[in-house]
Image (tube, rainbow, N blue to C red):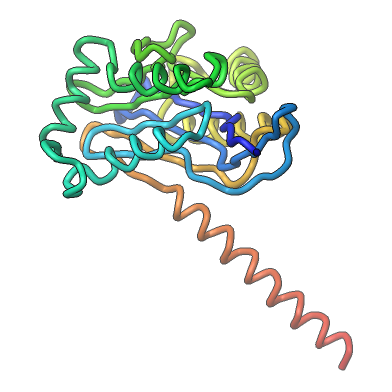
Length: 248
């Protein structure tokens, strides 16, 4: 039976000039593996979700428990979730940020491992927030929140090596100034790093993008996906016109 593992590339970059913000970006490819770890299928999938003051992106196993967890965060007022709601969700998020521990993610992975999953494919996250301040965290498989150790950026997933190499080369080569990263340059870094990481066979698809600013959270994944579809349709229409013109 095929299993679904989200080998991916997720990038988070925090600005340090102009408007305070965190840019979260990811690829949108889901991989299906057989029991011998061979890729047998791929499909598109958005890997990031966001709320009023937070955004999460994950890398790891795509399990039913993870989907339920994501659905609960997306729809906290759903009647299926008793004693929950937007206020309870906000409390959980603030507690995780304050305590530097996301207990629900620890429980999520503990259940995955108890049911036969391995630690290597357990779920890790990047989390961007604007409460109590604009910040970004790596949430490890045990639910611990950690800040970046190498500047203003964090990278997760199977494309991590190529993405980090690209960002470091851009900074060292002075294509980007690490002391002058604004929203525009952060988006540029994310886009370039994802393109570089697309050489990883487990990453791919259009970019998903979330911008967490001090005032609100902006999600652009669907806009990017739809823009690419429209661009393809337009090109195909132009091709058909060109073919008809040449045959007339």
